[in-house]
Length: 163
Image (cartoon, rainbow, N blue to C red; front, side, top):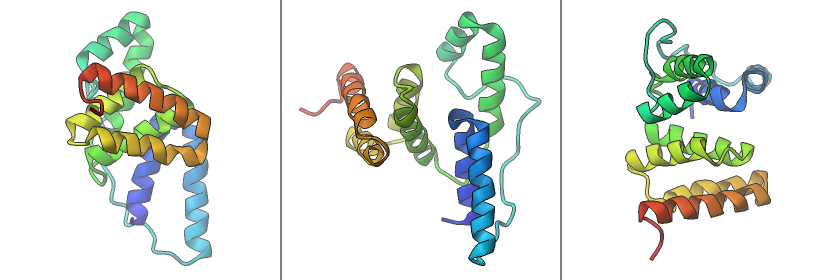
């Protein structure tokens, strides 16, 4: 993974993990690159669409969020739109990353469902989705255990559970 790829991962998860944590990780990455004379990033990134409209979030979810709190919905659209043009990581890789964040933060309702649906839509299999949750056990067994229950229920609902 290149320095640019790592930075894209950190910029991508900032939306879900929180900007202070992502900023600290970017600073630490820069320190490690200097300390170990690692290749610096080339600056390859993505166009930030801060002034556009819309969002890559599915319309029913956008409507539900706007109905909950309109200013929050506007902010969510902006944040999702700003990272929508990232291309160093595939959609599948990005969904696996966000599913992992969901497991660690226990955001296992709307967010986890949306990320799972996007992963399956990008060609991930149910077993690969299970592998993402299993990967998360290294950061918290009980969190992954709870997530595995939620994943199993979602896959059953979708008719893709193990037979």
